[in-house]
Image (cartoon, rainbow, N blue to C red; front, side):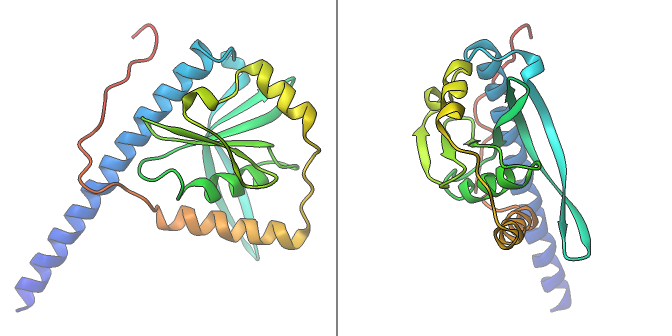
Length: 192
């Protein structure tokens, strides 16, 4: 009986590891696509884009870390974060908004969640989806215009604490890994 239980646990762990690997593969494809789109189609320069941005989140007496895949700056100001994932984008919206609200000394106004086939653009102040699809990701001039129309978001200390807990909960559960992913579509960066 113990051998059966151990074998079942081993099989479950193997399935979970494969699901995580498949999910990371899809997220990597999304990162390649998004970078190509930003530089090749949306008018951003490589120096406007920070990749794999890690940041500290201090909660109670602990210092933890989170990350976003890209931070896009215009006029020297962090203006848009992008979080690439696999699985349901709607389940990642809240994580992206929390990351944008916590990344720096003031919230980044626009957040994007993307997978290899779709994207959602979010207004960080409201948390609402303001655009769907890769075409909705603003070109540089649109992002400048969006920023001029939005007041800076100010969060209370209580709200910041809630945002930290939300972000760290999403980071901890590594949610939304697709089931039975087949690896998706191969995407090449320019020049490769």
